[in-house]
Image 1 (spheres, rainbow, N blue to C red):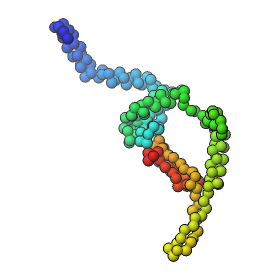
Image 2 (image 1 turned 30 degrees about the horizontal axis):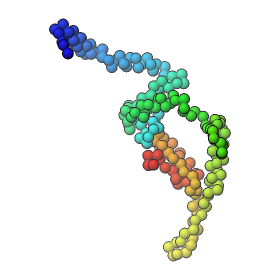
Image 3 (image 1 turned 120 degrees about the vertical axis):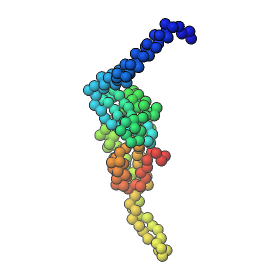
Image 4 (image 1 turned 60 degrees about the vertical axis):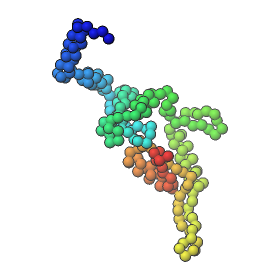
Length: 196
């Protein structure tokens, strides 16, 4: 690179002026913060959790007129302190994807296509199937031998055909309710995605 006296003076003067302005508070950070404020003006802020893996990183979502306009790491979250991995950072694109399923889908036995159904119909189908499986596989008692070798019948009241799978995006309260539902259904198979 050929640097003449005049070019060197221009670079030195520009660098000096830039440093002086930065000392006075006119840095790029303030300019970015000002534009960010305009982008999020009028948006409602919600905290949520990333659902890609089992870490449960916190996220802050900004919603404006029912549309997600910004998604970033939650700086107050105990797990990620505002940082996001590439999957979490790309979650906004996943949210806006036209392939994202937004309503319950049902595929009838023998059919080759999915059909959109209403939430009430989906709940009804799920409840009927869950009850049918539970009733068909219910184990009320089991026989075993006691310490004297006599056969004894013990009440167990369970089903081994139902399992529940939780995820890292659930809060402690949701996990408690999830476990409670599993116990009410009579299953001890309540698992977490991180262990699979």
